[in-house]
Image (cartoon, rainbow, N blue to C red):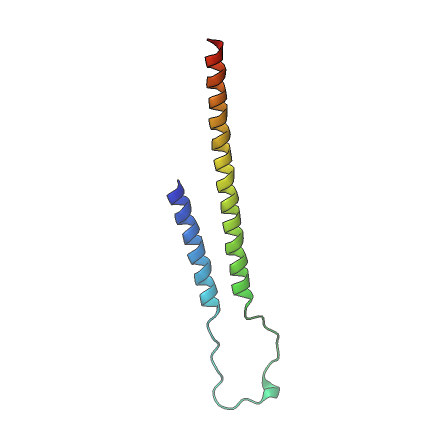
Length: 93
């Protein structure tokens, strides 16, 4: 189960990384001289795909860690209930 979960997390990380790398391809430069007045002025946020990818990776890791803790606590509670049941059964004898 852990191997499958680790494998899925690694695949998600690689997919997000690949998307971020593909989004960072440089634009083709214009050929020849282009006056600044003819260039459309627009605001760009070139780091946005990387920021989104970073936050996505962090959130996936946080939720994966919380899920892992939840599973371990459930297993520990189950084991504790089993021990309590065995102790109660032994004291009746």
